[in-house]
Amino acid sequence: MHTVAIVGVGLIGGSFGLALKEHGFAGQRIGVSSPGTIDAALRAGAIDRGATLAEAVHDADLVYLAQPIGRILSVLRELDPMVRPDALVTDAGSTKHLIVETARRHLRRCAFLGGHPMAGKESRGVANAGADLFRNAQYCLTPADPADLETPAARAFRDWIRRFGAREVVVGAEEHDRMVALSSHLPQLASTALASLLADDEELLAGPGLVGATRLAMSSYDIWRDILMTNSGAISEALTAYIQKLEYLRENLRSRALEEEFQRASETAQSIRQARSQPAEPGQ
Image 1 (tube, rainbow, N blue to C red):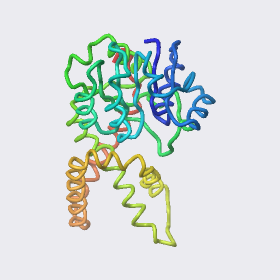
Image 2: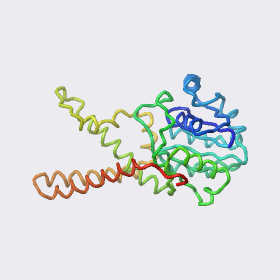
Image 3: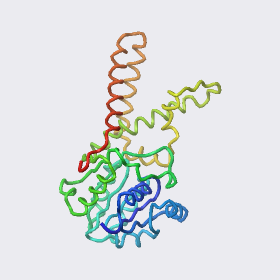
Image 4: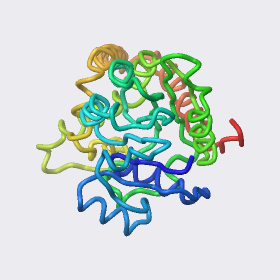
């Protein structure tokens, strides 16, 4: 892999470029973004130069789409005439089914491998990017066919993911969207709902619990709009299950039944943190 086109050099795209440099990539990292973002990415060292989409992908071995989902879908529809036949196109979109289907319909000349790094921050932009963003994070790959993982370009890309210290997870696109509706999209909406509920409380008593619970509420709707639109069915099911759980808690506020809920929740929270704290094994 000698040339990488990073389309969308924000938090994720910028971190991908920085991680490549940090782990010894000696090729060209070409950024495609607005002029202001390109300037910021150059200053941060996330890319080597900026270019138009057509110029960037013309010689790229890897095309890394790290835009909001709506823009990823638009680029996939126009990318085919521009790419090299031996290139790999991948993305970092937070929902996968519609992206994988769009790539299947519109990309004919080169390979595509859907991806989703389970890493991020509340703050956007390349100024918040970091070479260590993917370390110990799950990196989901959603191949349309298992053979998509074994092309030379895919193998090279997967090797870089491992070098970053990320944990590769292979899952179908629809199953991915069901899982992240519970593990990512529901936490965002729960945090948003709580902060919105408290918006008119002028004498709020805010301890560390509230600070932690509303952290995700600082996320931008500009990013979440496309996520909610492209995964609305799975998110609706997750919200229904969450509401049912809240109703159960309300019905049992004076019951010892909540002791079991607290215990299960504590064990789950601890296991999540333990899994996140363990370094990924080389070659995993």
